[in-house]
Image (cartoon, rainbow, N blue to C red):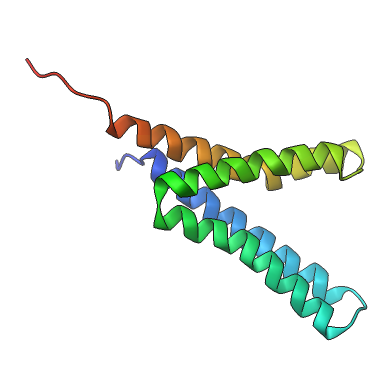
Length: 122
């Protein structure tokens, strides 16, 4: 059985997170009754936000991990302070919007720390 590294798990989590929320941004903005320019702007910003962080994670584990972790912390703070939703919606947003980048960032940062440990051989 193949052993998955934490980097692989973190990157897979980010791809699933970005795919789900990019689809959600497109589906929700295109279903709203507004001007086409506004829909295009919302889709562009959402795509840049979610896919951009995922591309950064694939480009550099260290910078991407720090960015994803910071993004997860900011989204968690916004979920509980700015977004005023019912408890069930807050819990859904916590598990689907906030925790995936936070967990992914922590996994990437912890994996990076493993590479700097010195090994002693006997």
